[in-house]
Length: 271
Ligand code: DGL
Image 1 (cartoon, rainbow, N blue to C red):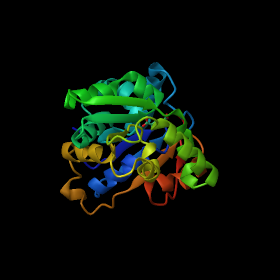
Image 2 (image 1 turned 180 degrees about the vertical axis):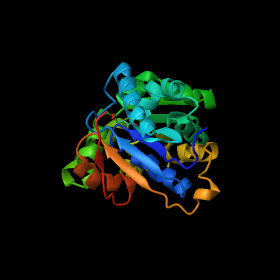
Image 3 (image 1 turned 90 degrees about the vertical axis):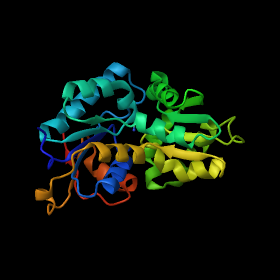
Image 4 (image 1 turned 90 degrees about the horizontal axis):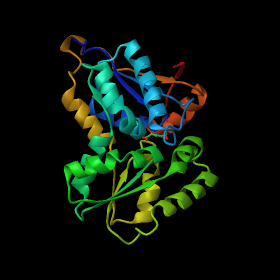
């Protein structure tokens, strides 16, 4: 029997999963969370599935060892490569990924029947999004493009609003959207780092396109499935603990941008 008073564990390769944590906190205000960013080994997106599986198992083990009541894989690349493995390894612990909720959100928005998935190379090559979208609506036209530079850009510069990063962001976004500018479509941000480019994308795409990500749908799915913190613990103050495998000061400083609120302390951990 899992203790309902335990926190929910969340991990990503870096800070992108903080966009999911933000949605989880909004959907579950009385829950506590432990967030782990595997910053020492980022990016996951250009690594082989076997390596990402190994990283995902180690990150999950670190969270499970601290005591959690559910695990959220707030990384599309790790969800694509390792979700069934993690669910099997940690059963009966509830394990949630971000791909199926993201596919659901995109399929719901795809009135014109086309979806452009922007993701890491690993996620695009794996084809999990394509399968998940077709499972929701077999008639969809799906395009998928890898945006390998975006994760680096998000972690290293854009989040700090440098002019240089802004210029590069504009160029790489335009490149990813080439050939699609005049078509109304759904753009699915299939990497948890990408929501920080949302405003820039909106400016490039115009009002015709809907931009969706999996943060909110994932949070709703988790909220519907977990056993809430018990009444006996209702007076407990919800907390968030941050762990990172490298660069804790940078994580603290830049992570606040992804989370939309300041981060006080980040603990350095080794996996
Ligand atoms: N944020 C991760 C995702 O959602 C991947 C970033 C990376 O390449 O590490 O796919």
